[in-house]
Length: 431
Ligand SMILES: Cc1cc2nc3c(=O)[nH]c(=O)nc-3n(C[C@H](O)[C@H](O)[C@H](O)COP(=O)(O)OP(=O)(O)OC[C@H]3O[C@@H](n4cnc5c(N)ncnc54)[C@H](O)[C@@H]3O)c2cc1C
Image 1: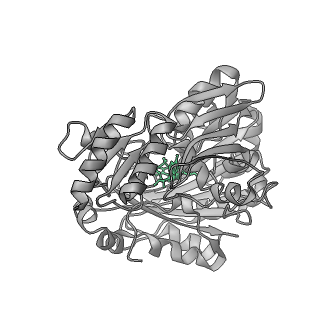
Image 2 (image 1 turned 90 degrees about the vertical axis):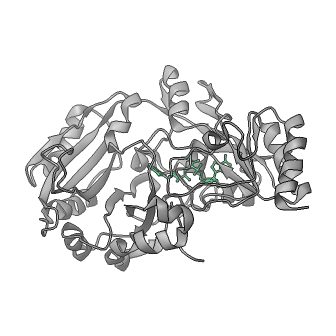
Image 3 (image 1 turned 60 degrees about the vertical axis):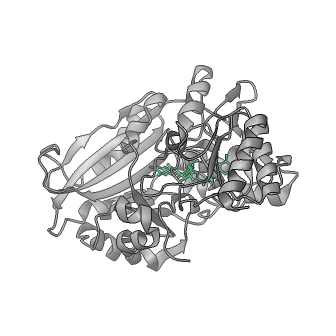
């Protein structure tokens, strides 16, 4: 039997046994089912199945195994690294139930729920989940890589808050994985994206909402194409070295082209923006950020008390899909020479650099063994670059070679400790 015939026979069997949609290429809704935040890659399966309940996942994995058809798991697409060619794509977004236990301060989170969905369920109880910079990221996909939250330096790794996972194994068996299952529990907390097994539910601890101060300080460090002033970058290094754990910050450096549609203050300028999130009072925020405010004129300052529901404004990242590639380094320190280089960065491709301040509660061994990378790191340096979707969709390795922002990370390599799997996204190179 050809692969297509196998898929079509499997589709017939699945249509009778799962609650979610079972779609073949050409069926209405096929492309929408594969919608993704990553537009530089596109799955081209022989069959797509949308799981509506955990038993759908078990049925798909068991039957696909019997038919010898490979299965690729897809949720929001933020962490996509390859395009599946053929086989079954199993989508998880309908597994988005969230059940909060306010007394235990936990949430049972469906395998396809986003952080926004968890946030919405937790908020009425005065609780918040360990979400990252953007609410549309999948809660489980994020936590599998450790999960660096908005308040990571005070709250620790998201994966440290996990109580248990409900996992369907490759052969379609359901298994509850908690601290008693040490090897699996460690694997699921930090190793990053999985192929083969599917988490249909995770139970994770929630945190008291408390008082959030959040926003960003934006500095103009020079003209795009000219050498930028590294003063703000050096100040970030010195400032972060002395900060208490309650403040978590990220430095973003990017150069804007001289294009009409951009706000005048950004057109043709190199911009450094420090995103700040803090548990505490307005006065705490003002005191802790004062040294940074003095370094250079702040062209935009949005740091203020913020309802948790608006936390996306802290990093102010675009939440619309695009074609991109992301690479990163975990480092022990920021080399001043690398910051000098970053201020005048010009290279073969456009790149956005994000330096996340780690340390604080992220440092040191886990109470329950895990596989998180970055427990000894003080910064995560992440580089994101756009890819040409026309190249990427047909030749992902060529797109990687053309657009990989790895060159922008090299100067930081002197203090390299490793790589975070969660921030390695987009088309990969060969091998
Ligand atoms: C714009 C942007 C912002 C980000 N911000 C942060 C941040 O602040 N902090 C942080 O730590 N990370 C962040 N990340 C990284 C993000 O956590 C990872 O890319 C994560 O893998 C995304 O998971 P997803 O389910 O949304 O994406 P998907 O691409 O749908 O999933 C990625 C992979 O995870 C696996 N997966 C997902 N769900 C399941 C499941 N239920 N069972 C089994 N496997 C599953 C699959 O292998 C899948 O291929 C960000 C990424 C982007 C693109």
